[in-house]
Image 1: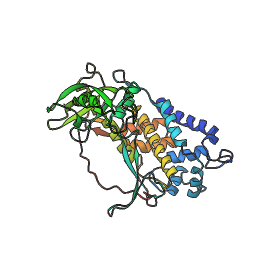
Image 2: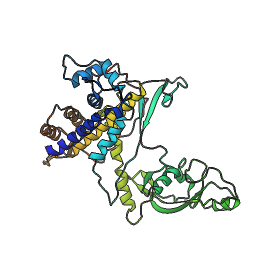
Image 3: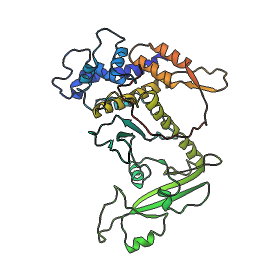
Image 4: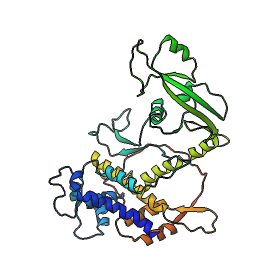
Amino acid sequence: MAQSLTFFQTTFMDILDEMDECSWLFSENPLSDFSRKSKLGFKKTLSIILSLGSKSIPNELLDYFQCAQDIPLASAFVQSRNKLLPETLEFLFHEFNSRCNPCLSYKGFRLLAIDGSELQTPTNPEDKDSYFPNVESKKSYNLLHLNADRGYESYNCFAHIQEKGWKFLFRVKDGTGGITSGLDLPNTEEFDLCFNMYLTRKQTNEMKELFKDKNCYKRLTKDFDYLPVKNKKSIPVKPYFLPFRIVRFKLTDNTVETVLTNLDMEDFSPAELKKLYSKRWGIETSFRKLKYTIGLLHFHAKKVEYIYQEIFARMIMYNFTEMIISHVILENKSRKHAYQANFSTAAHICRQYFRGNVPPPTVETLIARLILPFRPGRSVPRNLSQKKATSFYYRVA
């Protein structure tokens, strides 16, 4: 087992060594940055950024260098991280994933869950892309949205996935404001219907007659990349064909869910889709761990480039921790509940392991020992409240 854990650590360090050998590729000034020997060289600077927690920069440096008398000052670290190109941590993120992430399949498909989460950053009016000025007595703030895409429930998004030859499964709004509101659907708790939808921008008399069949023809007024924005009536434009299913199933006795998919009806029954839908919970818990356990809510800067560095650094360390946990075997003892690794504790152990302070056998022993009961089927309602950024001047000591 130690060998498996060592693989992730070794792979991580190999990538850092390879990047260090060509550090000029990741430097703002290739001819001068990281050209001299220093305690804050290229690899060391990256390692510190990756292992940052929620403490202040001086305290983080004390932890990293184990309270050595000659630790670098916070100002020196800031100057060093300023030498990195914005794409450096993003490159490391993708490179580490490509070398370590096993490609598991489900009925021949690789499952990719997509969701988003909001990150409130320290107020910075200079960052126009994320700045929201004060409106109606509300204080101004900066907000980032961390995800792979926006506007999931849209014909444009479905078409892009179809053009790639992929399959999709989307949760859609059931009622007003969504795609289903423009369709004729049965007023039942459960159904499974196939649609052969033709999408167009034309509004000729002929098309107006076809639009009466809501379940087959749809006129688009919003963004759609596979039809021209404008076209003359004399120029024929073939409608875009988009086949899909809409399935409604019961989650509990009192709740139902509606999904839209292009998965085959024979291979993926409503019961199978319900099982797939339940797997989405993994990405929601991932964002919770990423933000509250790994520390994505606690930034150590206001500068946009530094914030992006820390976002990718936290995602890298989250993946590193999950990979380590997945290779730790928990003893199957006779207990009332099934048990799982305590992610909060494991994240702290893996941070120390990354720094080289804990050997692989100890990592495995600690993670396997410090566990929590697993209780499936539990649900907690979301309590939405105003979010405030935690100033980086006030940190846990």
